Image (cartoon, rainbow, N blue to C red; front, side):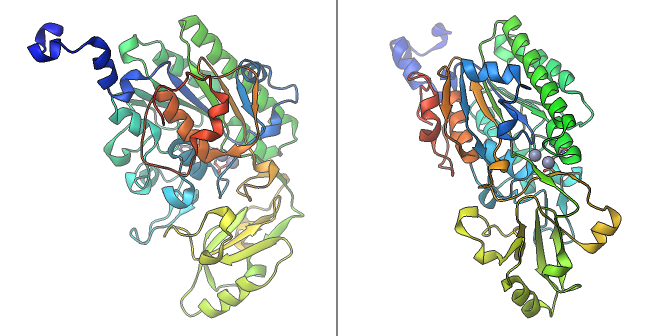
Length: 415
Ligand code: AMP
Ligand code: ZN
Ligand code: ZN
């Protein structure tokens, strides 16, 4: 190689060449970002998570990871990998519309839309930044990973398959991590839906939810053992997108009690209702939204409280009603189709302690036994960027929040 360099460059000392190398070339151990969907912060510490407990003892945990509003899956997974709040990254809900796509409703189950970069392009996820910097990336599921965001895809990715068992996901990821060093991902994601699914169906305190927690804890154990077998030191960051709240048929608000029946176009419902006034019904709807309600708060988009950091993206519907945690706002038509049963929901105010998710991190970059106070999930992205030696434009996240979790020499380049 040196022989191919022009004579002048051959004289440059090796050290200077290292200093001139792009930040990506200096990245250390691979980073694996694991999401356990709907893993409430306090599911740990209940005797169901020996593996996560060990990881926390050998590394770092936080008392909670506060989601961004709305505390739903797609908005928060995109926040975790972009450092932007939903109001800025544009994934403002699991269900949304955009005036530039008339007649189209984006939803998680609408593959042709979820795969379209149009919905994701307002932000740059860490795998895109990494690929652009020459690092290899792989995603064993993550919202957004099936799209060519800003024209770039993860080097290795899979189409989301809910039926793929947790252990099979781990086995596949270990296959990828076992590739020769020059083909091994420097950044990978792994996603589990089981705990969220059980939490919705049975509620956060149910034995079925505890069983899902135990199952995923074991799967993470398989991952850790597999990485040890490969002799691969990895910085593992385990997070949850939000927590879970018990719901009940006794805590239901009919949309029609908040706004006059037939006056709105309802875009979202559940923990919150987002809607627009139908033509000619604007004044009526505005008046209704200004009323006080015992178990919900309603606002015009421009009046949403500052603490929710929500309401400026054009995809946010003109009106929002947010239920008190544990309550559901549903239309009469929806209730007739699917009556509410006891179970669980999320999407509530991020300040609700039951919305806080898991944060555990362990690996060569992390201190041992550190416990961080609860922090906002926008601060995960600068941590990932720092671990990978990547930099990018400012986000809503603050690298200082997690710095205490890191060994002093963990970051070679400022994030
Ligand atoms: P939520 O409605 O916010 O509880 O969303 C949780 C659901 O999102 C889970 O049941 C997953 O099956 C689903 N999900 C997670 N990731 C993806 C993805 N990449 N594509 C489609 N659906 C997903
Ligand atoms: Zn979720
Ligand atoms: Zn969920």
